Image (cartoon, rainbow, N blue to C red; front, side):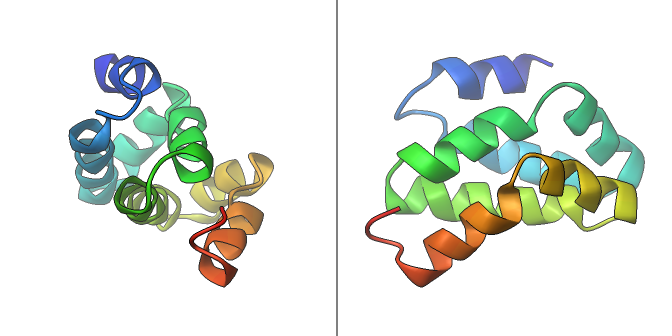
Length: 96
């Protein structure tokens, strides 16, 4: 998926791609699973860990859209340690 590649490569400029992945993932569970299968969790996780606050906010939202459909979607996020990272950002958004 080209958006996944864009987010991976566009350090500091990935916000539009992150938001697009969130909207795609929100549309239905099949499209969300397509994002998961295209390895879309990894660049969202990296943005959550390494980018500025507005990009982390968008990555958090997109991950929520991605994991909210079925237990399988949530499991894919849990396997990438996303719940722990989201909790860290929630606890201390400035130092994440």
